[in-house]
Length: 341
Image (cartoon, rainbow, N blue to C red; front, side, top):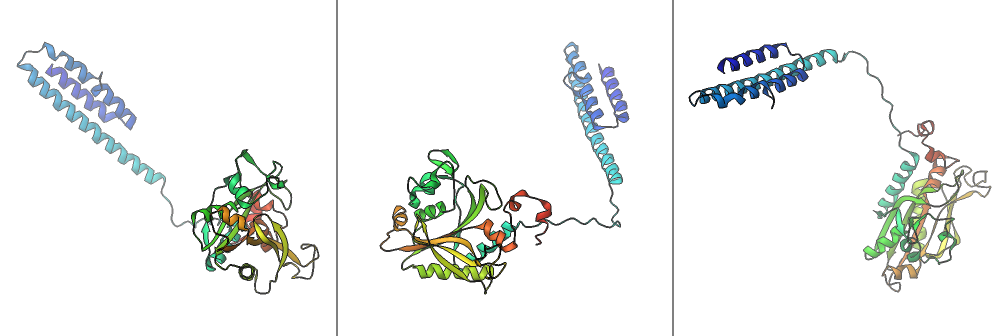
């Protein structure tokens, strides 16, 4: 048996000298040290040896197994170093060659507008709040004093998942969530995507961005609303931009208004862009309806508030003189490359 063991060891080391890849090393390991390998097979004959020979053969077999395992590990390390040296030689980089310029990405115009608007209101003391795009009918309509028969609740205007769940049609549900979790005074804004079942054309999209603002506290009046929005207009559009408040009607505010600003194209002279009137509508606003405050657990006798909401796509189109909302969503690189950092 000793001669057979020494013969196996000799054959193993001779074969190990010839292998060139890790796969060949693994194949050799299985052949000699695997469960059905040569060493295991010869050891099955240990039962036929005398009591004196068994310990000696067992010791020799263990030494062989250890030395062969170590030799395999050394061979793998050697092959790995060879492979690394070859990769270094083949993949070396000539650092004297001129580098290739990498084109810089562009910030999307809507993203630029959102960031700038958030900065304006944060400087005015507002905090940013978030809410889900999949909303309850309660938060989207009921809590906002929307009549049960209001056209906006119809399938022709709103995307429903089921009778009680929908894709939010505006960011106003964030107002409800904020008033239910916070005690006045409240001064918040929210920004996000909204969804309505609109046809796609130059001025409409079934998905669009809105910004919502809400202030609730003691003694809040229409004058506070007017002053806040006029300051916002000055900071975003410039000191020379004028704003005009027109009476309007929204279920969740009373009184309500829409705000027009001086047309940035003609500066009030009248042009095709503003329809010849010299002003362009940018947002809706008003004093929070007492029913909305009470629905959120706020005492309408003690507290008042104002709210406003604006379409950010329209603001973006006005600021960058974009005449088709579809440009904002087509992701055409030729269009996006016009907006530098």
